[in-house]
Amino acid sequence: MSYDARINEIAAIANEAFYDSANTEDYLGVAPHMKHKVLRDLYSELILEVFNAALMYRTPRVLDIRAGEGAASLPFLELGGKVTAIDISRGMLEALQHKCQARGHELEIVCSDVFEALKTMRKERRQFDIIAASSFLHHIPDYLQLMRDTLPLLSEQSLFFSFQDPLRFDSVGKTTKTFSNLTHYTWRVFQGDVLGGIKRHFRRKHGADENNQEDYTEYHYFRNGVDQDAIRSLFDEFGYDCRIISYFSTQSDFWQSVGSMMKLTNTFAFVARSKTVGATASNRNVASRSKSSPV
Image 1 (cartoon, rainbow, N blue to C red):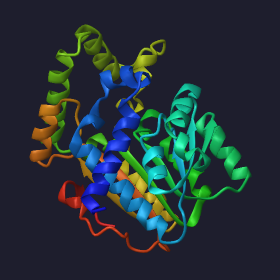
Image 2: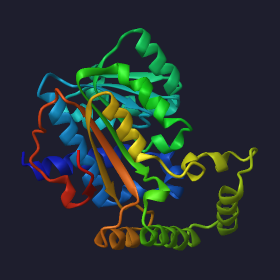
Image 3: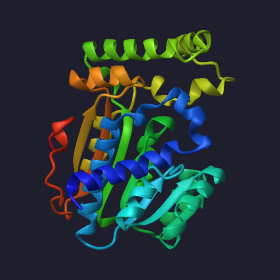
Image 4: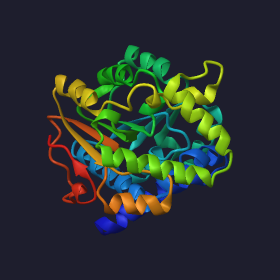
């Protein structure tokens, strides 16, 4: 199978895992970013790159943090990995199990709070070759502590991979920031509940309502996005080669195309590989569709 065909296959698997379920319908109403082909292709390309790098040593053991219904777990299983999937939702994990019946012997599910699950795994001295966090870091208050908790679980030949988190707001240029806000507001007008959206926007800017769970779902609104440089510094400290892949992401299909064509960046993926991991088996240049900071 050709490289492009493999990328398309992985993208289709990830797409089905994330969107072919009633459990994700409400989420898609407010954050449908991954429906865009350009983002699915980038996501799939990075998954294949990370997997091939780990595969140079053995069949990769993968830990999928907040696995949901398998947007990361399913592609890694399809590629031949052994996956441990953590999620606090029993329903999500059961849906994942159902989708993985043919490869169920390669899948372990852990229904637990992610911090508790990682604590248990550290006590058990478990090791993984890939740890993946897809569209997750911006949802938790202390994402840096989460990554510190994963470090003891990474094997000597290991990679950490995250995808779809907002760049630190003050690192985004004024043009990109203005354009991103415009695309969000114009998309939001056609989603209904315009008044509720306006209220949430002003509460986030001027102080959230402690009794309103919706105000605290997206923690990045209160902490200047996700600090990509702090993440890189953390892994640098532990001897990893790091790469930040920045790209444009928004809800609207039309504005996604425009922002990508303008080469704007407001979102990032992150790949950290231990220095014992050799060069990726992929010769594809991911930067052809994104801007990547130097390792």
